[in-house]
Image: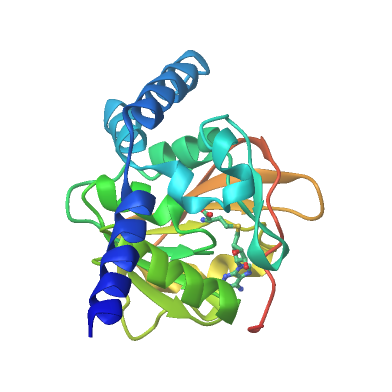
Length: 232
Ligand code: SAH
């Protein structure tokens, strides 16, 4: 009986320890926000969302110390957590309005999904790696982001059952044929997607206009892991 209770107390204490967001981490996060501002991110809501999300809880322990550097880092299944600047840039380009329903393709670590949640959006995020999906779904739930809905599946298919979306964000390097996701966008909706091969993609903002036309704008070069078909 007693060891059982002790066990529970120890597990609880360990959980609190991982959830803990220390003053040191908050300080490092303030520095990161300042760095992003200096690099040209001017959307205050995006900066505040980044200030709130404890990025150190999205990295494996080995990289925890560097969580607030403006770098991408490896996560499970040979994938990466995006660089904060890229997260800030993609989030800014989405022009999010309160309560927007957003589909993210590429849940990965879940960090970007949490930033979208902090922007007041209803987030639906898809991941093609089962292991990564399950691990991330559990983690974001544990650290208080249980309202984000995660899906294991192929992002090329989108989420027809939950469409249409106000915004779509692709966080992996997509080929041109990802354009069919636009069908799952509301009229007046926006999709932000890096398109291109290998080590060089162009960031696109694609708007679905009232008259059914599509407007495309480009925003420079980025480097993402590839968007791959099927599940793993
Ligand atoms: N948004 C993530 C970035 C992860 S990297 C974060 O903040 O950490 C891109 C992710 O897209 C990887 O986890 C990769 O497995 C996933 N991905 C690639 N192709 C996909 C597809 N067709 N459907 C869903 N996810 C995909």
